Image 1 (cartoon, rainbow, N blue to C red):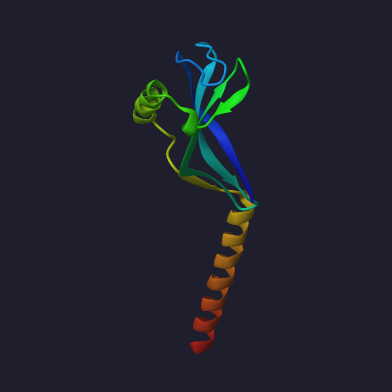
Image 2 (cartoon, one colour):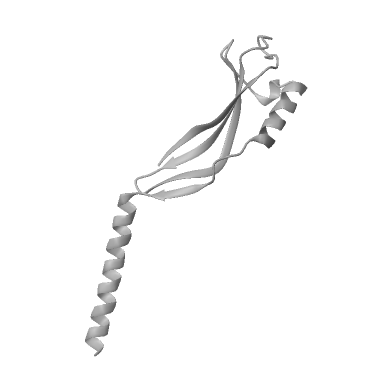
Length: 116
């Protein structure tokens, strides 16, 4: 099973970085979890967000956020619309389902034929 995070939305913030104090370069990104196996692909409802300063190349953790950054992040969370959770069955799944249905139909028809 392979879990990935796909980027849904990225917002450039005009706040000062708590590390380097630059007011340019803070990026808030929203990512949604994407799961892929041999049998299906699915987008889950799990969403993660992180702030990265492009100037000093550091991740800004919530402990380091200022009040201004917290207000902007809260606003962006409310404005964010995630992708709908969905599941897509791959060809392998459909093959297994088809074989299982064929076996069930064959078994039922044999049982009905022998009872006549």
